[in-house]
Amino acid sequence: MEWNPPFARWFVGGKLNASYICVDVHMRSWRRNKVALYWEGEPGDSRTLSYAELYREVNRYASILKKLGVGKGDRVALYLPMIPELPIFMLACARIGAPHTVVFSGFSTGALADRVNDVEAKIVVTADGGYRRGKILPLKKTVDEALKTVKSVEKVIVVKRTGAEVHMEEGRDLWLHDLLREAENYVRPEPVDSTDPLYILYTSGTTGKPKGIVHSTGGYLVFNHSMYQWVFNIKEDSVYWCTADVGWVTGHSSIVYAPLSHGASIVVYEGAPDYPAPDRWWSIIEKYRVTIFYTSPTAVRMFMRYGEQWIEKHDLSSLQVLGSVGEPINPEAWLWYFEKIGRGRCPIVDTWWQTETGGIMISPAPGVGLVPLKPGSVTYPLPGIDADVVDEEGRPCKPGVRGYLVIRRPWPGMLMTIYGNPERYKKTYWSRYPGLYFAGDYAMKDEEGYFWLLGRADEVLKIAGHRIGTAEIESAVVEHPAVVEAAVIGKPDPVKGETILVFAILKEGYEASPKLASEIKNHIRKVIGPVATPEAIYFVRSLPKTRSGKIMRRVIKAVALNTPIGDLSTLEDEASVEDVRKAYEEFRKAMEGK
Ligand code: WTA
Image (cartoon, rainbow, N blue to C red; front, side, top):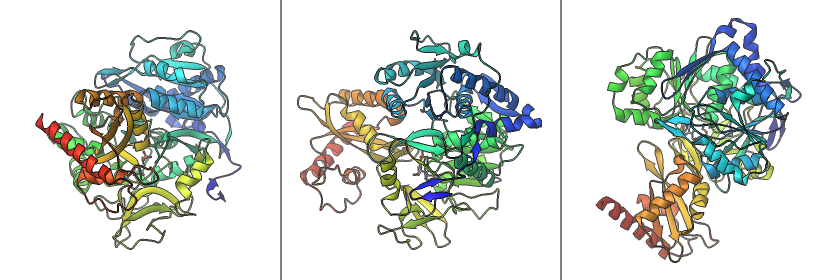
């Protein structure tokens, strides 16, 4: 490691290629005939790719990108549903040294445009749609809309998935199947430096626009390869299913790079978890004999509500290890997961990590030695990870005392920087406590040193495990012509972890009404996507602010959740607190009355 605080560079001088490591190496053994990917479409169609087939496809896709002028260092944006083409394109980009930016297909126009613009992508890859709950996601239409505000994109590659009619722009849009006719079967993998970026993935922060998290190639791969061995005990015969979308970091590491670098078989499912019935997932586990299953607490809680009859119909005896990620898992959900899904046989690895950490940091590790588990605790940091919990001043907290989670030493999967904004990187992660990586999470250690994660300590929300910044939602709300100002808070939710509440001040001449509230909701869906749909919108005359004009979300939250408001000494206008309280109560009554 070369450590120029706060910038770390790993395996400097080393050369490698991620697609070579995930695909080519398996060509030299019997694994070439092994299943790399079991894919299941929502309507029930399926596809199986052996490693040899994956190799062929990755090469052919890489040749297409090359012919379109994509070279080392050029960025390619992938806005695709959960179809095999998504991991294939990621590996094809890696093959030619072009960092990819995957944009979650649940994001909409504004979110897509922001990301493509920031990364200045040359190519966007999308599809004529993807299936979700029996409906077709109009991805191509969203791309057409988003690209109106983007200059960098030269070509759009379109995958035919649904057969839905789409507009193809002359000279810009190209069908993948047309391009494949001219594709070559071999493209030499481009040797890249260990410190060359493998990908840029956007995530939400406390303020402003999403940040492009830059991951290296060497450090990222070494870290993930090791962690999946230690945490999941991944083996030759593992059938690994991570239910996350590839559009989030969990999908990058846990669907594509780590399991494929191990030559495991992965499962990818396109659609909604409970479609057409609440046993869809359990039927997939049975069908492919899944051995390692990795999902979110939100999903576990949702299935708890559906009841056990959906699980009992299926043979889940292939399962060996269960994983949880994305948000704290409550002990009740943990025990249910352990007993009903794992039938009391499978350890649960509750894995704490972030887009920024690249891979798992704190988790039980059955692959190296299992410590006694405690439902709701992520147990101990993994080997090499120097994590701690500190107070406001940066001093280690006593057992049982809540503080902030920090990491004391760099690790190979650590983000390299924020794309195009090293200052923001320094400020966000390394300025709160000089010399310590600030994760932005509350945590606690118990008497035995077990770590307990207690939720975000900043303005980031976790909605069903999806990470969304309050600032992003607020900026979408104020884009609506009726709104002058808005504040967004997260409200605890028994299934999704959190839901979104919006407090908005209307412009002169606009009347608060349920119709306007639903119009604003639709606007948010259109700009960011369905993940950001608020549970409710409250109209207020003012918002509590500090004297320097910053909205005090914690005050709004305390009012809405009816918890102690705390210190108000920096508040500018006391009346605003009452105003929020009144608006909130009135609306709640109005809604309950319906
Ligand atoms: C939260 C997801 C509790 C946490 C991999 C973190 C968790 C944020 C856990 C990162 C866990 C993730 N227990 N909280 N096991 N795993 N988190 O970037 O707040 O989408 O900071 O990465 O998710 O979310 P991100």
